[in-house]
Image (cartoon, rainbow over all chains, first blue to last red; front, top):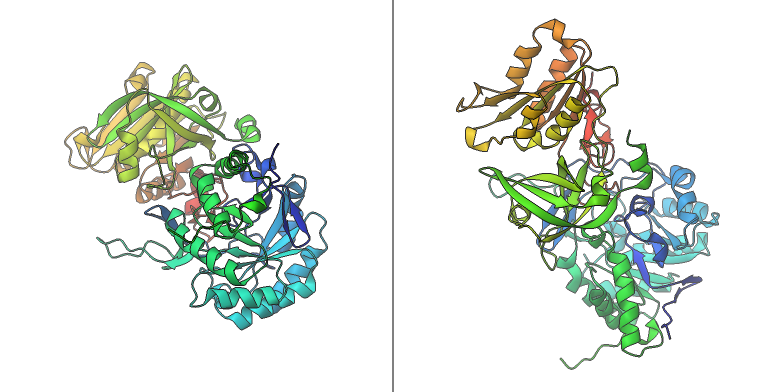
Length: 306
Length: 270
């Protein structure tokens, strides 16, 4: 018998626990011929803001050991253009559509949420209060438990759709931020966004990124993300979505054991466009081989004896 | 001419390395058997080669212009060793599998009315121009390739071009082979004679300063010019927005999507 892979996050039922991570999958159509988009549990879009944003100056990416830096800076076509040109194709696909939203202040987050709440093709929102590449909003919200809670509460008042909040690991007390955001009405938490990082050309002395500092992603940050999921899951009882360096199904299983209910595949898609598909197939086989009837049986199954 | 491929979209395939040939001191040409992809590829488009290592280091795939179509479902890529990723690819041997996806991006678009094709390649930038030169010579156009490198040991040979009647003008900075100086100086001298510019198309690939000079010469002579631009990439498919360059008007252009081949005015202005 096939294991039950479905996952509930607030009002949202996903056909399986594998999503794409925001910023690594565009608006899904970019990957349509390269992988099976229909097999995903959800697509999380590139971050969308009220107004179009041109992002940071190039160069914007730099490869690092088992990972990469990016300083794209939330370049996006803006909400109305997204609704007109990107959402229709997304809504026609089987995976649930989770729109990642970014605002420079609480009011902008509210407006984004209210407008997206009207859209039948949108199944959920992921609130980005963790981008390291923008000067206002972004990580500034995610690093302050009070501000993080205010943004979450404001978005909650504007939408009844599933509400995920994506948190930054660039904080002293992640559990406190997570606890406050959950209390403010989030249905789930995405853990984690990129880590603030930097690279310099040792010969010329030039910085590698136009924005000087960027966000580190890829397998290099996976242990940080696993730790974040584990710690938060001990205290916060809403669903957690693990994100950070997941390339294979074994990586995903590690996150479920740490306490994640679902996972996002991010930068790994760059290297292997079918990474998310392979993660899902592997999870299903693993559950079958282990005799588990549902993905829920794996969540939090960690043995504290090394 | 790319509409069919654009609609179908790029494909992810496991190819097979069938030949490795040293082109010059730091550059290798790999022949890859990958029929589905070969059939879709136009000159100027590129493929992403996934590093042939288990695990995740190096992490990102590497973009390479298609250098030639070798027939029988085979395509060639020219790999200049500039770091660990390109070195791992350059030392691949026949019978090894290689995962790749493509074709990606916008290729060259030679106007129908054009009769003469001028190509300017700097170093490994010559890679996509050989593909274009072969195609254009077969289409009956008169093709001249200006091929420049710093020194003789960095120049490769392309026997297929002579067979098709393509004129190759070789330039080295130190004069060790061919003409001495910059490849753009050879171009400038060549097009100094106005009558050769009738129905002429110019394409260039190489360092940014070389492309800019080509664009400037094209502007002076009212030539239609296209340039193939290089940039660091993560996704190659327009999703990550990492490879964008800033064009002359401040507009951002995704090299993987709006390029890698741009009309020179898009990048450098009129």
